Amino acid sequence: MSLSVQLYSVRSLLEADLPGTIRRLAQVGFTQVEPYNFAATAGELGDALAANGLSAPTGHAPLLSSDQDVIFAAAKQLGITTVIEPFIPADRWQDADSIRDTARRLNLAAKKGAEYGIRVGYHNHWWELESLIEGKSALEYFASLLEPELVLEVDTYWAAVGGAEPVALLGRLGPQVVAIHIKDGPGRTDDQPVNPEGPVVTGQLPAGQGVMDVPAIMAAAKSLEVAVIEFDDYAGDIFEGMAESLRYVRTLTAAGGR
Image 1 (spheres, one colour):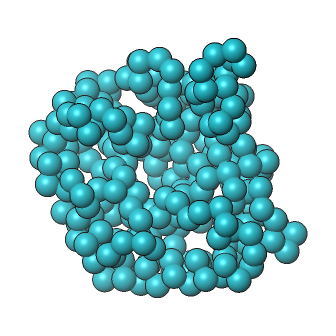
Image 2 (cartoon, one colour):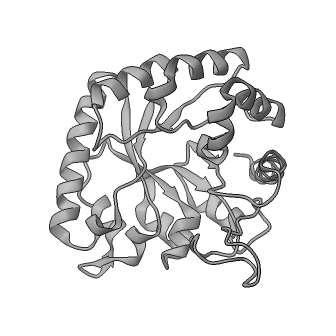
Image 3 (tube, rainbow, N blue to C red):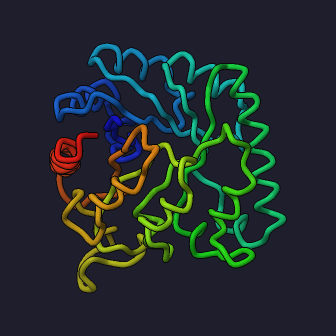
């Protein structure tokens, strides 16, 4: 199992200075990153990763709304071996027919990805867990429709926000889960302020400082290949927050022998 960081965490910094931001992540101690929408910046991103000795085993890209050949070609260029669809709107998770259609389309994307030697996956938010289809969460219903080669990246924080117990969810999904997002905080959606009198922020915290049972979550992901640290937003210095998360998760992996 390896540790990575989702570049969405530093999206505004990347837009301002991609090479400098990648260099800072390497200085924090990361050796792997998870890019998002990487086809748009594949050349510059590839140069920055190579200059800092970083790799990108996974990446997020809009497979169901963009040119898949362009995405998979960029993934090959960057050395990404698993391309993950990161976002299907909440209204597509409210009925079985919509979910079956999404699964069908993603299964087809997986077949095209295989032509490039690339695996395809899906990453959840909270609405896939809030919605119930035939007595199970929409995410689990969806997972039952996927071809064996298609994998899941479970965002454990959003799963909890959606009402799931992450450890139990990971147990039910089993070997389909090869990646997880690790983040921590109060366990609520982005539109609620940390302090009712203060600004509206997510309240997300470095791993180990919020409500998430990160040790139990990591232990429950039995087929885990990569654990990805992420902040959707952070009120403090983002690099300090990521460094704290990285140190904490490293202590867990050292203790657990993973």
